[in-house]
Image (cartoon, rainbow, N blue to C red; front, side):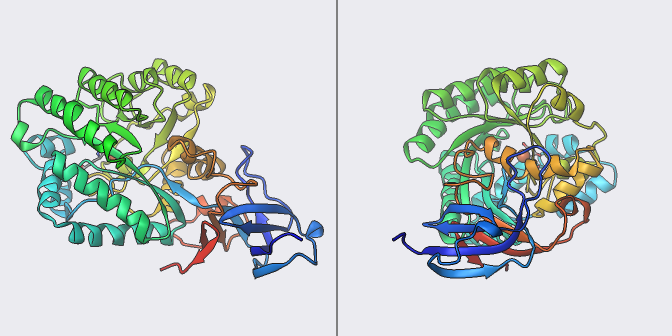
Length: 407
Ligand code: DI6
Ligand code: FE
């Protein structure tokens, strides 16, 4: 006799996210065993004699894969509301950064914070993300910018994944900005990153990937290449903040290194898009940053479609350019601001977000043997998830087969 099913979800309409239109199944069941999806099918095929430990009637609600936020900087201390005011008075994001504000001001606050405080501030943001359906989250470092402080941030990120019912993937973003002690010596800082920070993060298994900010106000192509070479040497996949504020050729460089994703991409050109298509690099759309910085340069969605580059959607949760913890709101913005379709937006926070993190084998769709990370929504149609502005129709959230309270 088979061991009993841990949890049986009955009467759910499933959007498996395995197809490109986000089709809905007829009323169905999902059987969960050992934290994994052990069975699924139409209600008519459910064995009435199956032994079940616990069951839940979905009452026709919509079941999707747990949402994946594949780009966040949520581990940081403090906020930058003052810079928001300065920008409203006419200062630009780049001007503030060049005047010693911006990323470096969050670095100061993050360095000063003891791990328990950093943990408490970051846990609040993560809990908000989870309340909107997130079951896997990527967390970048990048507000430490010293060996000690980058490791501190990565450890806090890993600890968050131990303490809260969510799957955390960490990314080392030591090449986010030049720290004050290296002012005017960006190349030397990159040497420090490649010779000390990348090797140590790899040795301690604190990073699942390596990212860099390739931009006029941050690091150039050559410096980014050096970071990528160090990542490769230590067996870590790469991602890139590419072509956000200007066309630097970042997407093509990311593709050359087989990057999991290139993110932002407001200014990418067709050559960059084609390189991404050939490399299987996911394009991560971050409409929160576009909105908050009042950008006007829409990423070339039509080129991504034409060349078959999968598009993910993420919050970019950070204190400077995208202070948000609402992934469904980002789906709405991806549609209204970038003209993505609601189905593309849903795939962008499920299947393609999983690819952007290299976890598609185990996450991102509802299929046999995948992790039972699931969201049950009080909506009729998946398009409603992108349509509603700032709503939270989440009825239940499951991580590794267990249901957790929403707040
Ligand atoms: N791109 C972004 O949008 C964030 N970092 C990056 O590389 C902004 C980070 C900040 O302003 O604090
Ligand atoms: Fe970012």
